[in-house]
Length: 366
Image (cartoon, rainbow, N blue to C red; front, side):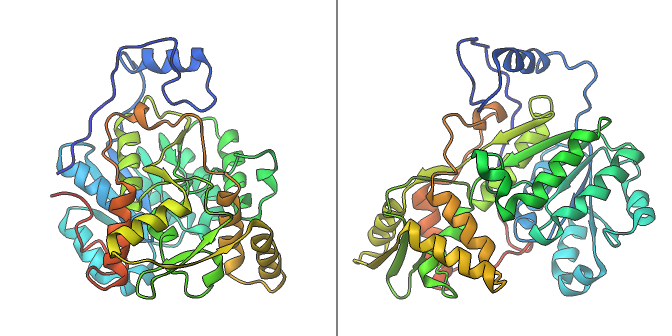
């Protein structure tokens, strides 16, 4: 079973402690608050949105696991009738772990507020197509007295480059941040993870030249020249970091936390695949110019791959790399390595483990 702890180090004013852009006074204030915290409320009654989705599954399981260790108190989810029907096994699993299930539409203010009564923290794991729905939800949550909102920010840093505000995939998240900035009565936390290594290491058979690693074929397509490092977070680790941010609730108060599992270049990822499969792979490269052309063409025909191509172009331009990370602010979080993720990718693609996500499978060490 994973153990989480509250981070309480000795303070060294000469260090930044992984803060990307915070001043000395900010860090000093966080350190002081971690010892006294006379007014801040620890998460006890947590509601999860998007609990059975791609990343929500990992976050939900991590929260449930932490709750079984004595953290938090009451855990609930707010989900749709469609999910109740289509993911009945996951819902049953949640109920068996003591999670309360509330069913309703994200557009139903009355039902949502009824479900939120007594909730002090909302963890949103809503997918890309539902990001904008967080805006009214934030207003309703604030009106009902929710103390903290974890926005669905997991993924690429939407404020990395000066021109990041113009990137199509970032628009909804930027709107959510702007709305939260106007919501004075509720705290927030953003957990920014960079790309998920689980997905980046996939085969991308629907668009082989968009980058990918096909284990069965022994083929890889690397983006750029293959030498640009990319900062990844394993999906399992996303859940761990969210739990750590919940437990270290003072440190994470009104913060954008930049976290990661490991950093690797496409060439290093390829080399690890070749080592573990014990064979030389056929390799091709999609340079930055070609990737931009593919991206432009995808938007012209309204392809669902357009967003994927934009994000991969951003990653290939170095848009995941930070001088400092906030991992250490959250205490000890044991993360996966490049070798771990390659091993998992090989197992998924060869059928040794299921490729999808499910709450029925243990996602943590039990």
